Amino acid sequence: MSEQPTIEQFTEEAHAFLSAHAEPRPPASEFVWGQGSDDVAVFDEKDREAELAEANEAKRWRGLRFDHGFGWISGPEQYGGRGLSGKYEKAYAAAEAQYLTPPMGLFTISLGMVAPTILAHGTDLAKDSYLRDLYRGDMVACQLFSEPGAGSDLASLQTKAVRDGDEWIVTGQKVWTSNAHLSQVGEIVCRTDVEMPKHRGLTAFVVDMSAPGVEIRPLRQMTGGAAFNEVFFDEVRIPDSHRLDEVNNGWNVALTTLMNERASIGAGGGGGGGVTSARRIHAMLEHFGLADDKVVVDQIAKIYSDFMVARWTNQRALDKIKAGALPGPELSTAKLSLTNNLKSYSEWIAGVLGPRICADTGEWGTYAWSKMLLGVPGMRVAGGTDEIMKNIVAERVLGLPKDPGIDSTTAFKDLRTN
Ligand SMILES: Cc1cc2nc3c(=O)[nH]c(=O)nc-3n(C[C@H](O)[C@H](O)[C@H](O)COP(=O)(O)OP(=O)(O)OC[C@H]3O[C@@H](n4cnc5c(N)ncnc54)[C@H](O)[C@@H]3O)c2cc1C
Image 1: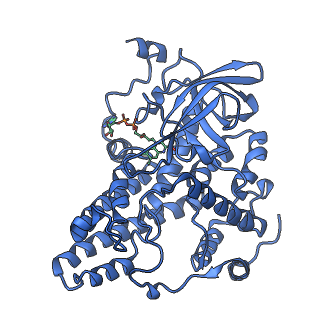
Image 2: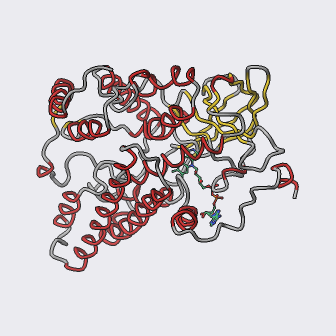
Image 3: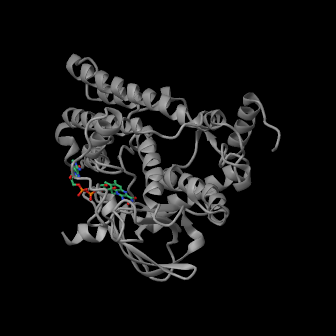
């Protein structure tokens, strides 16, 4: 193990790297209404050409970070990490926030959900094959869970994997796969035994998205973007060495990913630069002559406080995880708080902007919010709907009786024919 720097030495090293490769971020007090980014979308949506250019820029930045020792600060050295504790990750994030660096949304699923799952459940070969490339940004991973008949009830999925010697042959369809078109690999959960109850006959793999038989088709959503895809698998071959965990233990693998997903959605601000920027809100109220309107100010003060309370609650939970505890069901409240707050916020913005949010007159800082308004419902569905989150809180946090719909004893093949 290499010698551990003090946090002061590390922070100095981070600033030396950042100042050599990025411009300092202007102080927030310099926010000027009508200038700079007007990105307040909940989901980052661009046309596919612009998206690709942004993805390449994000990959370039991750590569630079990785090569200078800031790509996977708390990861094991064996797989390209630096072997330092979570407080060094935090110190780097605080330093990087002071510079203008490319948006990193491309890696939310890849590094926030799939990479931790490969680390927890992958074979040595899978860890060697993917972790370094994922953290260096050479490779991006997507999450291939949902199917047309299996979203909230994920364990009903039907994409099947059949063993053929040292390989598996996968056939079926996934849907709502974010960033599949920008990904080189995907974490896929397949049915491998229909004789077992539905949660038990599942197996997870890492699949090569360019393998013969994989077809990716874009899905257009109401915001106008196409960040999702349907992905079809027609006898796609996956080597057994790219299996995650034991055969028929895919449900536990999926739970690791879902827990990380809910933690990272809850921990995020829920949108592009500026969605919850207090300075931007203040500048907007001044611009529209509402800064002295006590009702409007009182409403936003409450919403802003709710965002801050949720952020600190998440931080407490995330610090627990960084200290070595597993993400727990209590993190489901993080996602619920975020979506509730975004809903109140989007209603408030619609009230402030009125008709300006419905028609694009070219006025800065107005119509752009329609992307936030239209994106919030998606946020209430992604990573587990509000209703499912409430079920989880009820059952696992409050200890209430289980959802009567869950059948953990009947063989999957009998459930389907009933
Ligand atoms: C922005 C976004 C990104 C996504 N990205 C991905 C991705 O990258 N990979 C991936 O695999 N999937 C992804 N998804 C899919 C997402 O996981 C599913 O949409 C979600 O799990 C809900 O499933 P469904 O759409 O099939 O809705 P359904 O499960 O059919 O639910 C329909 C309605 O019924 C309610 N409901 C269902 N069951 C219950 C119950 N037991 N109790 C109470 N109410 C219930 C739901 O709350 C919902 O209101 C994404 C979705 C969104 C919106």
